[in-house]
Length: 416
Image 1 (cartoon, rainbow, N blue to C red):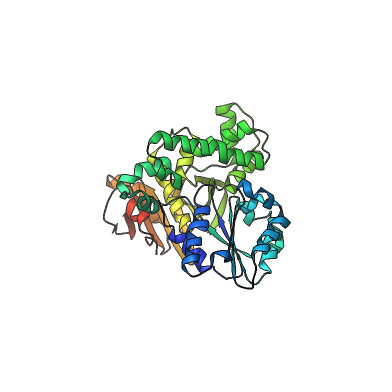
Image 2: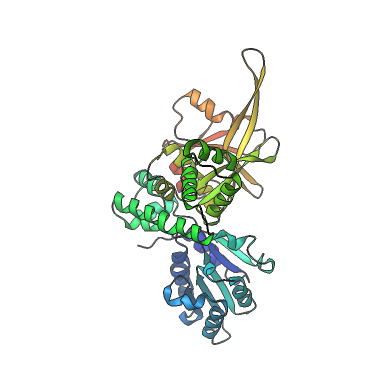
């Protein structure tokens, strides 16, 4: 089964020969190796590149264990470059090589080397990398399959695929499994034996039971404002465990670095400033989120919100959570304050959208509730409500667009 991932492939193609290391990053098993070693490799061959001018090394392959030493890897690559022609260097799971930045910097000095690597740890792109490498990498962030890709791979229409998609997520291997038990076992084993073990071993986490509990708490509160202090209180009240908020912050950071989670920060729309007290966390893949909870707590409304967040991030939008303060007079004549929320503020340069996720809007009262925050935003950027219902897109008198979920997810240009 071939899953065309043209969105990412085109990014790699457009980066050819730009003098930067193309970094294909993302959650393990989300299709990075497939993208680089099969789809991009096929593109190179079809565009006339000779096979011996493509150096492919999978560093997680036991046969290449000796190449996880920096100098050995560099010498191996250099030995395969036998003339002055252009060479494409494809390295899978580069983070397995200590001091890999030295290898990449050395390759960047070679005029005929165009370098592509995959990575499953976001630290690659942050403070762990020496200063000299920053600005010399071009990231292509890969997510699990979108609903559109899932439907193309499964041959289903969105309505048929939706339940499986929000239950088992978009890791490509899911499409090859033919029953719920196999899918559940795959996700559970992946979460327990790959993701958690990888983080625990790499970060030398000592309190593994607490770390696992934290993953479960994060999974159960997707889309809910939280912070390390609140989670610490949850540990204390529900689990009878005392754990320092600073430790929780580190643990959440570890999961972010492994691309399991992403954090959406709250933004005061009227005050035009970030509010650091509470944030929302979303799982990169809803199937992994559900496996973390033993396939329980599958509330469609929260999973739909998580999937919309992932779709926005997949398309390259920076996503925040919006807040607005509403002041009103109560029955006793006293002024009261209430925080209203906008699920997502999607920004890309000068473009911005305000987006609400709503499972359904059955009546006018529910619509007033869902549009309460959007109606109080005074700028001219587009306001959108995404609903689970299959409807024709329409705008109300306030200029708020209501669009069906499947139209939003399946049309890659639904946000122009």
